[in-house]
Image (spheres, rainbow, N blue to C red):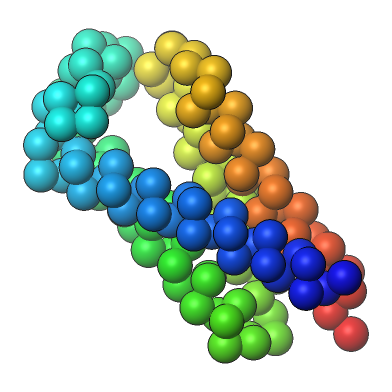
Length: 132
């Protein structure tokens, strides 16, 4: 059963990390957001004037950390559950904060990413409870 949760974790981390790196790098290289179809007006109620800082945060928090956690799983790091919990909470928090700041709900993306964050968190909890 632990193998199942590790496989699910790997798939969820690949999904999150790849999307975060793609989206974040796109926002860094084109801070207007137009490169990935975002309108700058989404930032109206945020402290940001463009998508550069959100892009940097996205790359670091959800891109790099997802891949780092993935590597820890593949190398059999014994305490990987901590990093899964961290990544799951960070992803879920990212989406909740995003919803509060941009005041726009895009169901396909937001529901998918919230579910991904909860899946990663759930895998971390399971692996923590069944580590021995």
